[in-house]
Length: 404
Ligand code: PLP
Image (cartoon, rainbow, N blue to C red; front, side, top):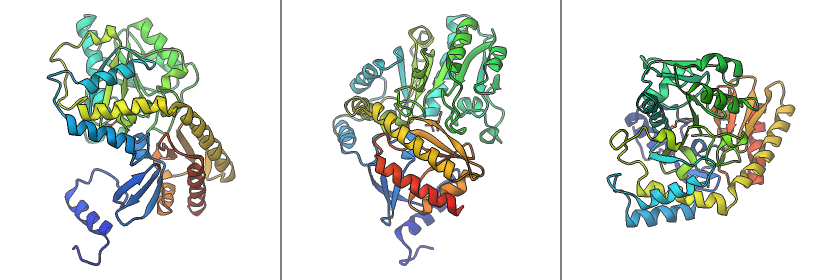
């Protein structure tokens, strides 16, 4: 029952619990506004945000330049569909083509849709362009995460996400991530494509050994399979380079992006080499909203901000600072902690137990973090995070660890 004595949070939570589906394990907080790395809830409680809306808001919250780019576009033209060419989408494609992977682009509205498009393109390339419809097997990795639609879920290597939704889309094989020998054994003339996150994010911030991505590239090229990199969480500068795969001198056939791409306006993208893209013709794949003027204007602003504000350099520097601070914390709090791992501003503190308990205690103290892979406390703050904000976050996390 809603009464006049309830706080605004409590009133909204009561209504939300009644009306919204129970598919999220949400914290009982209703956010109202933000600025940079700080959020305030509807009752004006302050939170230091080291999650950026799950690695999305790379310019932080309440960014006036981004808001202006969105509102100017909204006032002029916000949606037309892809029945016509869209100026902001073309400008965005021009900007993305200057990064480490050119080729052709398809825009959609989320990460899972970008992966869905990638899987469809790969199947159709093998069937129609190469005339090998029998090459349907998809190879993915244990502990991977690629999204929630049936196709993306079918290549997600964590049983907990698939439970109760079977049967999955067929012919998927999961192999251990980072194990080159397993890849050498698995990739064959039946393989349509290999789909990998260059760093497994949701699965626990798992980095492969140096040279592993290059070895996947070599095996795929040798055996006629396509290589898809899911850069949905690691891309758009999150690890200090625009794409995480840039650390190893190679390119995939297909790459997917979402999350930071439009800084918080829903958008995904699939980029494919000119050779592979030939598999799509008018009518083979589509999205009503994909790359609409509004999302494209936001993403174009993000592309410009990355260069003008040197966000890649800032990410490397702040990421190194955060990584060192977390390493010192891990040393100090052993045996509760086991170490750290990450790159750029995707960093994790590995615990000896359940990370959710520590994340909740930090939240109670006004610090927002998330869990990756059960035992890892994940930091994925806005790329504009300042050193004093990192200091504040690590100090609060320390208190939360001591208390748990
Ligand atoms: N792929 C990766 C690597 C992700 O981290 C995520 C989301 O966390 C997805 C795909 C799914 O993206 P979305 O939630 O936008 O559908």
